[in-house]
Length: 327
Image (tube, rainbow, N blue to C red; front, side, top):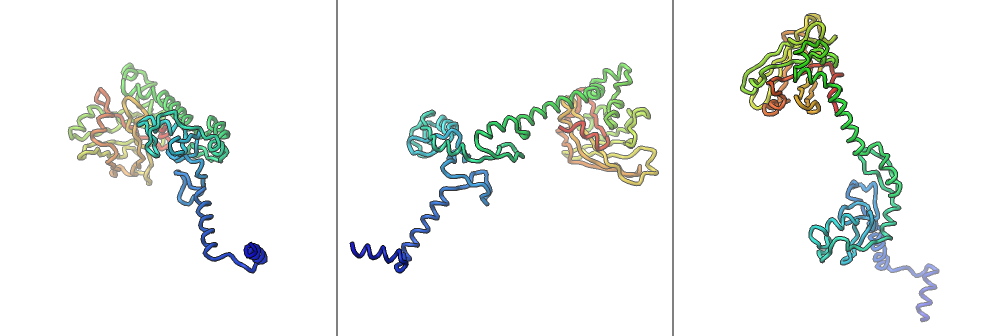
């Protein structure tokens, strides 16, 4: 007893040090316990920008616990939905494989409170909001990056697209209005209001049979021509398993034009305008020059753009006209 008291007094005075082996045995354990208490979530980078305590991680989805429950057989933590979903398939514990049925998990209120107090980021892509679980529940219905809200906006824009181009689509593919002599809804005039010229190719299925078809934009007159947009001749031909498109200037201003003119080429779908295909192109300044592109549409896909009457419609317009087809 006397020796123990002597050692304690001497150690407090600083004359007796802690053995090197003892110090070495203490510091590594402390370091391991601190690092084990915090691990990155599955969605974090290797740099560990956001570290989440290990005791609030779901062992199934690797996310922060939501309605934390324990597996009674091994004590592992998981979200209630994750645990019930895993046990519903095989009625075994996903961790130790012991018999476990859905809804047999034990609530862990301490872990759930800890997870609820953790700062989390909004799950919507592009949103920088961070808050506790209760704050996130309030934020999500109003989040401007909500994918459900964006999907509703996309559907609304799709409907607007269909309605805005309905007259042009009707004029081109049903030909009822133009056949009746209605000058307001001819295909050329309908597309010219969108800043485009349209090439209407009859008997387009001959392209699939290997024939080359030319369309010199015969539907466009001086009254339906778009100012600043040159008239073009379009040539379409099959090239192995793809289709080659060739565009050549027909405008009388070709002699004075010195620069290539950027345009957008649109392959109009006969039933759903949102399925139309767009690609940028450039029209050469001289009449004896052409611009050619392939590998845009395959031979098999081209058949889906030919309507029941065997007609194919391709519009050439100013780059600003692309917004009419963008969703």
